[in-house]
Image (tube, rainbow, N blue to C red; front, side, top):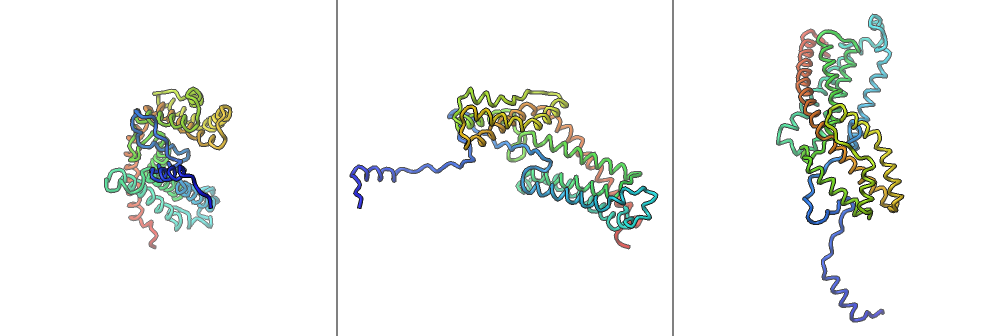
Length: 336
């Protein structure tokens, strides 16, 4: 049996009496030096796709593509047939606007648009629903319904437009396309957890905290951190068109910036095990640069877009209700 020296017993007892500091999770940022302002609410990263990066969002995108491709491929021969020859097609009684499937496309598409517009609007305006899911998830579901719905309405028309139907259809397509653009702008404006837009001071504080975290985790000197984070220095602009063009350009060049940052980190001796994580932090800081540079014009764009999108959505809903009422009055229903 091994006998411990007397001094060792005292040391073990002292160590056991001292409270241990709980291990910090690896994903939590280290607090910046004392004296800095408190960190603002987390700034969500921008999604680089229409439906986002969450697995559920990817599933919605897959469903959208499968439904769109399947319905189009099934009826492509009919839709490509000239209008005078369509009554002789074997699919005419099924896919014509008043046919079993053609009418179903219109009903389902109109319901999807109505549900997508109403649920998202209620989620934003009713306080009791504020805690029911994250707003960005509701926005994704809203976009899913309000883009797939108009597509089904397009199949319902069998690519034949006329009268008030054509006005409603093109207004609906305009809303769908403007909605995609609106989401592109919306996700690039930094927001707090509750969905409210962050102030410029809060974003700049988040940027300073992120730079402090990078310096601490990487062990790089401040001059090296400054050199790397200037790889993609963003310049502030105020004009709408220039801001949109620059935003698209930033998205296109994100891959080259990632590779350049990786090379600089390797050159400055950052270990390979931590290099990927440090590179992600630098890319997030570059994204904050973009949000700061484009915040003002994007806020203005979103304001004007909202003034255009909401009234037009109401007009489209009224046209849909009018069209449905006329169709039912004339007997174009599933009830024979």
